[in-house]
Image 1 (tube, one colour):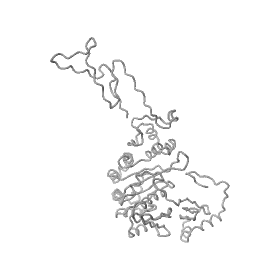
Image 2 (cartoon, one colour):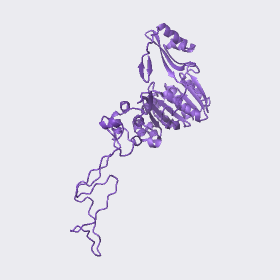
Image 3 (cartoon, one colour):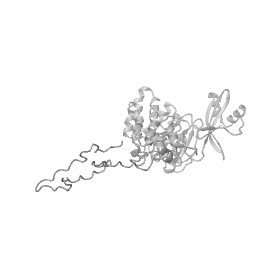
Length: 427
């Protein structure tokens, strides 16, 4: 079976391999250390390359007394941030000199690909010493302007935490940790970020709020308050992503939530009762800080024609609010959407209507203004200036001059005699 763009596809005319053949192939790609690890735990992770063919991340396991294997293709070429259609703000995030940057998402969401693109951007633009600790090494990154050392757990080092501790004595500028799996690795990564290094890693969490809670909960209760303070001081950004099928059927594209740690976000991290407010802080931080929620990212993908409205609505964190916002009506979940809404005051079709089906995007026409009633001044558009009042009329219809030496009588109030002289503000 193959998984193509997230869906399982059977191999046409493929023959089922007997268990003995699978076992022979599996042990044929393992080194002695990996064989011993497999015999002890019945599972092992490794990377395997075939010159001229490709490179694979392999997981070998035992099921029902026989051996099975899953191979994931790793591209030879590291794609850039632009190639992956990731937010440009990521280029600024990896320009940080110190701190902690996390890339999160579910298994198979492209975390390793994004992290490799970020490391490659540093490699191409900065002169740094980059140290990576991975299990296994996936992308082989060649030196450009930076020097890169890649270490594999089980081959070059015994564990993530031990490699991290050693890395602090190896004069790195940037440290990449393949995954922060346990308390000891998280603690060492926070310490490395505190001591002036840029530390980058991944977590299997859905969004920024869950990421912060996951890190804090890895520590004993009596340490969690201090860890919140430590995390608030070193965390620079959390990039969370999901892969969404493209509208043209040609693969998938990442919908990305981006959190950057500002003074306000730092306060929310420190106070465990306010961590839930981080989502609103992200939604409001697009213009100034380049942050965005998942739903804001989906809106941008729909506007650019990369993802269909139906797929975006299905994948949205808040589908009802997403539909309202797409129709030009304010929802309740995200309070800063200006740059995803098109022109101010532009009317939008409601999904499911004939107008939406015909155009697939907001209509450009504006509703005609209602005609004025006889004897009642027309109501000006919201924000527009009112026309000057007419001069007082004499009984015969001619303008009545002011009395000699007297003051001009005040004009009648606008819309006198009418009952609808007010402006309607649209929210």
